[in-house]
Length: 631
Ligand code: M6R
Image: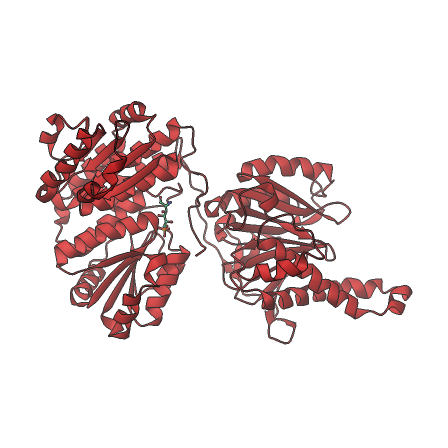
């Protein structure tokens, strides 16, 4: 999680850093910070709680106040910046990166698992301002560097003045300090580092989390370090640091140093790869990306169908039919797509499926048992919009190591998850920017249906048309939001596939409107949860399966009897006139197998308008990030 951006060059590197950070906000936006050299070559650190836009204003003021030499095109400067998703310590300015201890300033992505053992000891010599694991790295560097520095010279040499030698040695000693500290750290880290002893130079290293060094667009003498190429303009030349490598970026060049165990050795110029020109995502006139993406559901479903590789789908389908065990795994919304996937595989292929969230699956005993048998008969399907979710990748790696076949359903066929997979199914839904996943969910579920069913692809027009109608049908949804805007709890109920979509509807409402919401299997309500139902409750039932329609309606009767307001989402129009149904949202009768995919669309709109009604930014709800890259 979190995003790092650093730049060395002439001109407005501070502005470039702010723009770079904005492109990284999908990795977290709890707070942001920036560090740069002032005219006295001291490092000024500016931090701000909240999004990068708030930092921008503050950094602008500090830049002039400290006479940061950025206005003259001949001036050189080095900047490191960070956008944070909080892990250790609440979202606050004091916990924002970069952190300064002594002459060192550090921006960190990842989690240092053993930071406490150092912090307790370092507290005798350093004052820590934050609750983070990351500030400890800055203190460790300062401590290590001081030791190296002290050991270089005798008191006599100082008196004679060795200024030239000192200037040359500072960079080497900094590299050595970084190398030595890296050996002490346990956990995950990508680091961008400044030192007041080595002005206008950035040091960067990683032990796994992505970190890229390269040029900034066509500006071949402006060098950057970032956690994601999304922060770079087209034509930038990039090099992905390998674990253990340390890079230096200064006014002349980027150099990569390899950690050999015997100090650091220059490796020479890295091999740079150009990045593809990319289009900046645009809201295309919509007030939010989320609404734009809801309105793209129909288009994305069509694109999922178009990108279907018939041979591949046949191959995967055959494999699923012969597999001994089938696992589906993912996180969040993608996990809910797995629940629909389970429904489709069990219904259409008659095979039993285990669907588990990725952070749990790899610790489950039965996984070990299945993989110890014949791993080639284990099908493991991982679903991820981004393909970069750490929990999902970790689970996939475990299965891969044991020899299972890895199948990935993703919107990013160039992702880490896709790269480790045997089969990559590209849902091709188009870029999804809003934190709340919408069109990726419907396309993932559709991919499962296409993979397992005998869907007549020429009969899909009514399905696409209904998706379009539902995504644009906002009048009824806005009325519902107005009617229920004061409620504190909303429950979603359904059975089988409708339970999967109930969970997704509930998650969407929670994450962008902060309303308390739960999803239950409709039949389970009476076994406990019904105790929560009272006259101020709202219960939304999703009912798309004729086989269980009456059973789910029993639950609607039960909650109505206890005073709840009820919403029913269903193709069964006779329910509209049922006295226990307060509001009815119709899904027009398309192919029965596909109705569950459509039933969630009204609730995407419901969550969106609820969020807006409460004055929340639906694209960037609190505490969340688009891509969750920590376990
Ligand atoms: O990129 P992924 O599909 O792997 O992301 C998984 C979840 O983090 C994601 O679906 C999350 O739950 C969304 N905020 C849901 O709207």
